[in-house]
Image 1 (cartoon, rainbow, N blue to C red):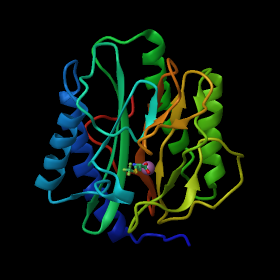
Image 2: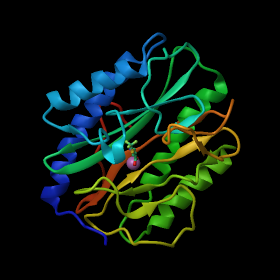
Image 3: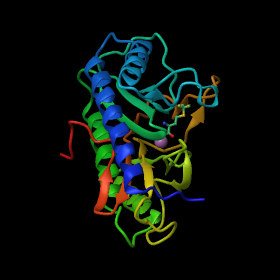
Image 4: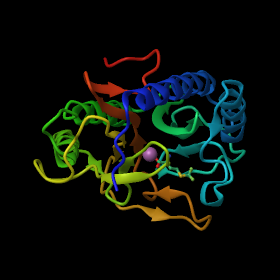
Length: 253
Ligand code: MF3
Ligand code: CO
């Protein structure tokens, strides 16, 4: 079942998206060598609540924290621990909030201090892959157009779209239909209609995209040395065209 949102509902999601983006920026400011993922989690949880929102991930399927912090080769779902981030690491931060009954979801990958040129390319190309997908959020297009644009761009950059995790519909629930894979066929899949809200989230690796789940049951890792990045926004097709609901102070470069 696909739930299309009325303009008033999308407006609420946009308010939640502003809160999410601003807490993400607060977390970003604290990303530096020496900080621990648990410190970032605490900061985010407080910030979310201070804005009158709820941390959507805390307790979701028994997940033990408010944010996912995924360093280096961890693709998604890293559980915040007390190991300090180090200069040269990259770190993906992924979290969602519930505001006035609506979910919004967002992820970014940040460099910690100075990182290698290939790590920086991975981060920047993952962001650009999102925007290539976003450009396909148009009436008459289908989900496959979004997936295909992301896949094609990443392939041209010599990078790999992870297949084991996908983007998703979002709104009254965290994960709604349809799935939004990061690989796919143009012209296929669910039509993009006004009111459709999606979390579009390329997850990208430097080398082959195989992912394994570690013993904690959450951490999704590529294995040693194969860095991963993640860039996610909640987007919608509004009556006046595509909207990025989780855009903060940062904008498309
Ligand atoms: N934010 C993730 C997503 O994009 C879901 C994380 S589930 C959690 O769908 F339990 F780890 F929080
Ligand atoms: Co998501």
